[in-house]
Image 1 (cartoon, rainbow, N blue to C red):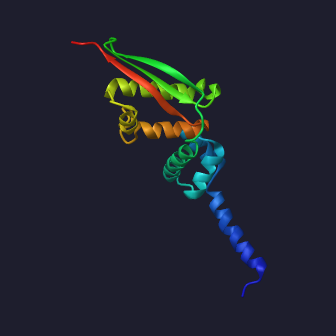
Image 2: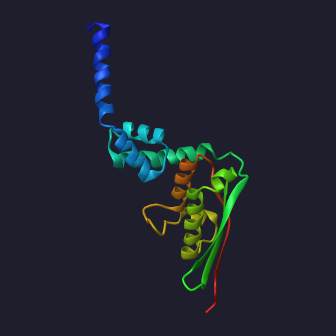
Image 3: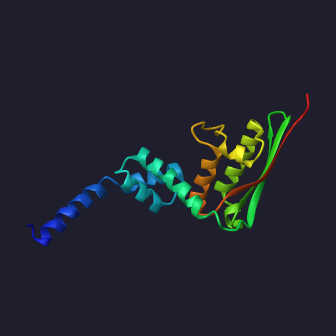
Length: 171
């Protein structure tokens, strides 16, 4: 049997070798790529063993879990965005809701509202569920639901699409 001190040293070495792969530069690179907090980026990189692609996948899974936890929170603020496509023949307006005006004024939230309005103009969804399930026009590997979950993870607040409308001039 090994003395207690030797077991502790072996555990420390394993932890140190795992931590040595994860540098502050790697954490910063992941944060810059995702906009997610430093702590969450560090946890994802540790779980992924320093692999950036695996860490991004882990953060996406974490985003869905975080969004689910915040589902019961009250939405008291939001932002409305109107988008006109091309020569003004197609237009879309969307109401995106959040918990506080602090987030409603945030660039991440405003950009999400713009992206969703463009999505509405391009895809003409029937309802919010169809909109959430539709593949992103900018990244077909993702959908609108995952865009909302990612923004929830970045802002720390529940985000939900309220209402939307799409208009197209008759031919």
